[in-house]
Image 1 (spheres, rainbow, N blue to C red):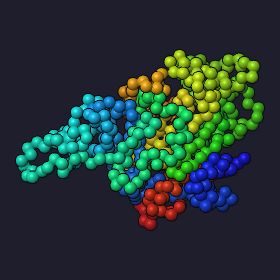
Image 2 (cartoon, rainbow, N blue to C red; image 1 turned 135 degrees about the horizontal axis):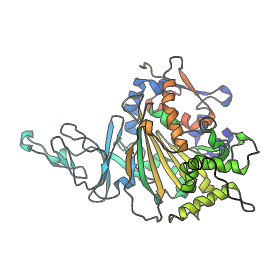
Image 3 (cartoon, helix red, strand yellow; image 1 turned 180 degrees about the vertical axis):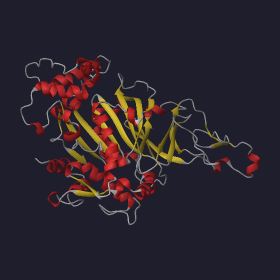
Image 4 (cartoon, helix red, strand yellow; image 1 turned 120 degrees about the horizontal axis):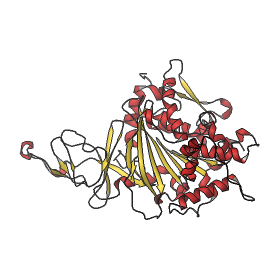
Length: 462
């Protein structure tokens, strides 16, 4: 069965997804899908995104663990927009535009706890945690000024998967978060994401457009090029994809070889590849650092009769987490070793196994050539009702970015992509059906920006 047939089979109830592969783009025999380069390089296109896309979409602000207790807060920025999420005295989660109603100063930065009010550091205007104006110093000089007339500007807020989502569109005419996520919550329910806790986040400024960052985690076509070390332990060919509408997913099996390598891949080669690229999932003794210290591969334990490398790896993962008090016995080998990768429009990717949950987000920076790569790292708690752990938020400079064997390689290639997109002879990029989740992102981007499929701005400055 071809990749295109598999997508159609898994996507029978998603007409938009099917349209992306047929009428929504050229048929397979009509050539690749062409996307204008200006979408990654044009200041005018970037400005249009800032005005027509980002104020209207649900985006990830922080983890629930950042704002789990009364008085917790987290401020986040998307290009020129800033939002502060707070847990109120009443336990309610709220979000506001991060701006003082007096002279426009930013109210909060970073994240923290113990907040009792939202007070501007410039002139000391203050609001309660539910957004009501409480104090105006030297009030008499303002004449008639009613507190009820100047609350903070609310932002829509909701949660899913231990994450806090915000939406600047307060018209209430747009979809709720549950509607926005379409089929993702049901598809991912098996993983019980609420049992995870956020340990840390990283933020890295990358010299490229935000879509370059998002695209890098929206297809597996690049594995055969950038991640050849993974081919002996990842099936990047028989990897079904699904598109519901705005949202999409792919599923990749690990601890099995890619069909690209042929049939004669011995078990030790599969084992070596898995250890090199994600051995830490089996414990620190299989981590990249340990392998480097040993100066070579780690011999594979002898397989029991009828046991496969997948069985062996899954057992090692269960043993590792069991030593930490986390019981994974209820999860199958497939749930441990099939990665479910969800792409949430416009800018985030969930990576999910039974033992692993990471979220990668691309945020627009101050210009078309700058973005922020933000990663949320979660671990499954020993108890489903375990208290939150305060996440550590770390800013990692580009030249110091170390996110593990695979993601580090993804990030290192991004500046070169933006440089290439800037070359004067390149007017468009070419996408295959295998890159259908990137095509899907562009089709929905076109809808938000009022463009025809493949359309360019009438007049754009590059």
